[in-house]
Length: 205
Image (cartoon, rainbow, N blue to C red; front, side):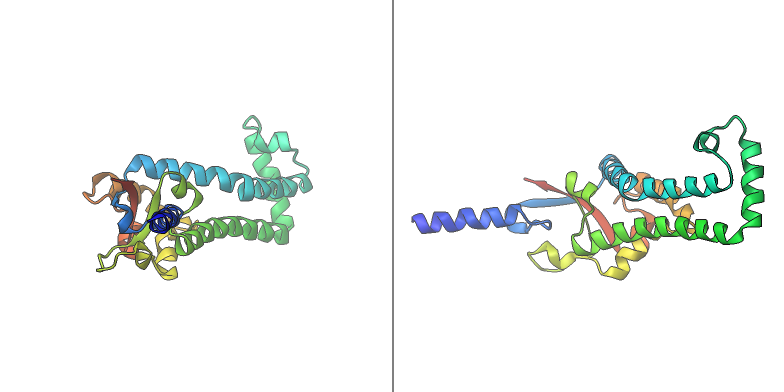
């Protein structure tokens, strides 16, 4: 009897540490709402700000310093036209520096894209989603008892997060996704519809 009880406790512990809760744990997957998505995204934004965005901004400011523009001037709106003219003249005279700036800019957003895509592929969740118990799964209902079988493919994850690529028309997915989540009955964004995925929240019952 004691061994059976110990095994049951061990099994319960294993289920509680799973990123993809099993159905035996009596978890209900409901469509993720706008508020929980916003909280999740805010947490991820803060994480990416300190790990990726701040180093990028420092690198950009170093380019401005090479052009003779101080950090204060670069962040001030008082002489914005003068700063723009100075920086434009500098970058026109040094196109290789401008190319480096473009590469850094693209690299930053590529890092954002890969962060969301790889985290959702390997774990089904980003750190923000872990906090509010969200998960990205395939938009299907196979007859399995383990939700890990619903893990999206890497292509699905890359397509779902393609809005992070800072080029038109991809960036237009941001407002469109918002409208889809607000007005669609299943609260799926356009990115999720295109990639065949959906974001759910696991609620224990």
